Image (cartoon, rainbow, N blue to C red):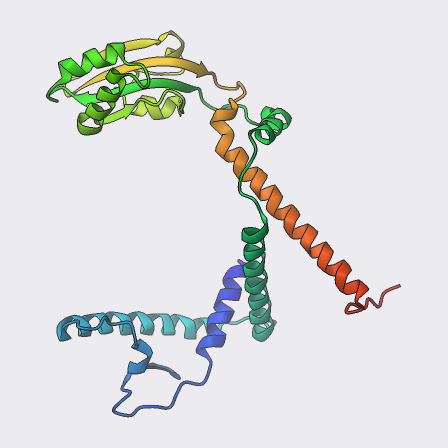
Length: 284
């Protein structure tokens, strides 16, 4: 909510700057809402060169209408600014936040390594894995859903029966699925939630109650054929494997690195300026 107030305050401050009193023929006044004016020069660069007159007028009209609506809303906001607001102070604070954020981003890009050693990931997982209990079963599997009328399906079924990763059958099947399958999962190292897989199958085919017994099956309905082969499953409330939460762990580690870098830099700068006597603290 405070951010919304700051944005409104910033908009008010910008909009309240004195408008150019320029209503010359060279700079036509396009609209006025209370004391705010929009001139033709304000649209400079917004209309592509070489655009036809009709299209130019359409773009200009749409922009003017949008500007007028926002100006009316801004005017109403100005009339309802709380009495205890100090707009200049709010804008100053917001400007300081933007400058600081931009500097921190530049600092992170310059000094923070984005690579995370696999051993660091493993240590993080060992310390925190209890936090990653699954809320739903996850599976590594192969799954295909293709239309019954898909041509070449008989040969594709043969590839399915003998496909192993990096084999000719696997490559042929992958290319076929890219062309004809409605949905397919043929990367056996990737984990998928039970809900995601069940959503692509007829209702009730895969459930929490029957997934344990469903190792491999083929079935049809009036439109599709479904092929499923399970390699590994982790049940609900069990600890998720590292490969499943790896990206989440990477983001968390990088976030910690970023926060630590900014905190260390802040402390270093403070100590340096304190020694240079550019900081004076008048406290007991």
